Image (tube, rainbow, N blue to C red):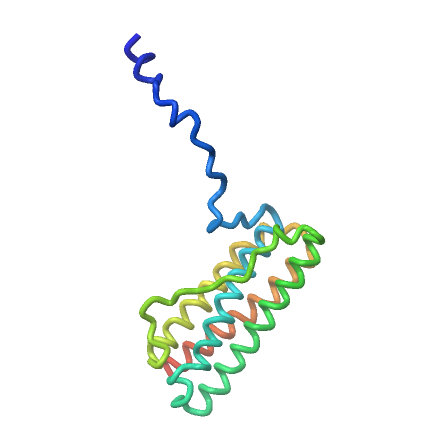
Length: 171
């Protein structure tokens, strides 16, 4: 009897409180191929945003010519990857654009974009994360066209990771 009394409540406010619904700050990536594509799109948005900030930071203006060429190439690749995923997802969802991940904004905390070491270490982490994500998610794709796309991009991401490591540890 006491368990029943404790489970019941006279608090009408608790009963009449409307369900707040889903958190507007949370996006459901979706299931299957769409979920994988949205996840990859988020990663590519992050990388494109990161390299945009790198090219606008003080480190960029003081970087040597080899680093400038490499980082500008990485920037261009990541912007292309972002746009490719945007187009692929748009085609996959058709008129249901609510299923497509929106444009994201990123907070880098205390990352110093003027510091060569911080920029290159962060680039290494981002590129490694991309390689791991593509390698792990590839088995989840059912559409062979998406698998080919992911396979091509992961090979580029791996070359990015290698190039960043070469800058950090020449030779």
